[in-house]
Image (cartoon, rainbow over all chains, first blue to last red; front, side):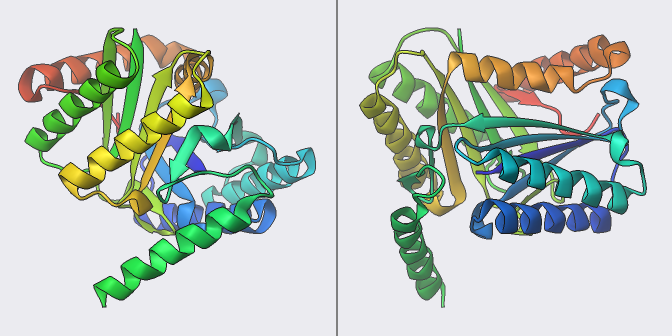
Length: 136
Length: 150
């Protein structure tokens, strides 16, 4: 979590997808203040979108972010996607669905609410570094 | 009827393994939560369609539907059971797993949004293609696979 599902009426090139992935990762991590390990971006292609939009973004993010953060991240997605796809910002649709962090488990631990990540992050970072040391 | 939605990567599991995972998921649900009819959907992402941490994903993302009145303890128990099942039987690390146990109203909104994104003119056609793919997969492979590309 977060999970960003991007639906496009056209097939997107690998390079375009990577640019979009980087955009979502950068915007989410910098505005929502979250680690990039857990930013998931998936693509659905060949689906004609409502109102003939060029991209439909379905975002599942944890409940509890401020309205300012949500506005900023949506703006960053719209501007960035329009730039990458060379379309108007109005051609991008965002549907943001919040979900209680306590309903999800990631990294082996129940997710915290926004602002309560420190303990959770410590446990997950430890698990990640243990995995990395085992794979060396 | 309750739903489980599974997002996995094409290279992760064989068709036989997917059937085994689905059977395990059903067993956990009936043994530890409820015996309501369960429909399990599989979205299997080909290479280049799913990313995590900027890189091609190894992620397994599972959404499990439950009743509104589920307790915090039961929700957490289910998350642990599903995560442990994947680790123990299929060596899927919890570090690569997202297990969400969500109330019916949230899951309804989630699936409604999937429908709403489609242009109304093509909604029926896409639905037919989706259903055809799912049923063909059920007949050929034994599980309901949903399309990523149309």
